[in-house]
Image (tube, helix red, strand yellow):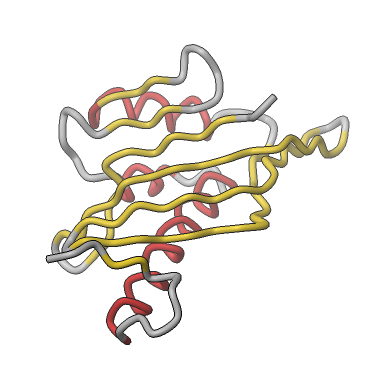
Length: 142
């Protein structure tokens, strides 16, 4: 089976459906983080090697226990976090998809709004009818 770039014209209808579902998974995760909702944890596949890598040096979080601690910390922040994407792409191979998104990270707090360039790559797997994150890697390019 050859990898399918679901961004190419002429992609099979089910491939377009995968793209929509994976982008919805990105929107769902970032929306839950913005809402400071611990349900963000459920977007990740509960395996010891599932990883969230953020843009801060200390943000390498592996496994369900550490992810839960991380999201508890995020949910307790006074600031809200959101993203605005300029470009998003998805490719897939069977029950595995990977994505790339480029845009801005938006921190909103008492002092107002701060926008920073931001990029995300991710690997998701299709399990029990849902796309779940196995790897999230976000970075603020310099």
